[in-house]
Amino acid sequence: MLALARKVNETIVINNNIEVTLLEIKGDQVKIGIDAPKSIPIYRKEIFLQIQDANKESAMNAGSAEVLKKLFK
Image 1 (cartoon, helix red, strand yellow):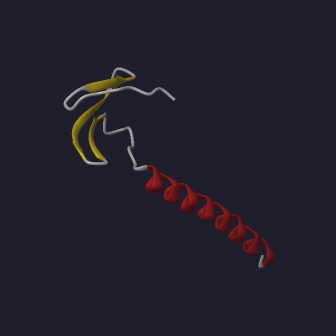
Image 2: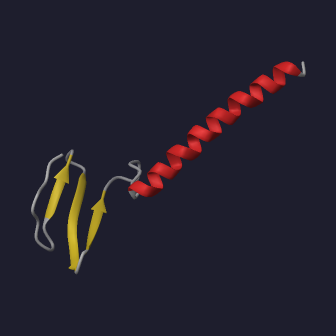
């Protein structure tokens, strides 16, 4: 992991097309802005993990549906 120190309104650039700007610091909370192409999905980590779990569950259920279909042919 790369750790950088930034002040308010300072930006880092990732892969020439993503900019992350430190917008505000209030107590223990930091507000950042992310400017990236629309084709790049951006999620908070807790949401990303929920999406992964839902996808895994869906994939497992899809496999179960295929087994059921074979049983009733």
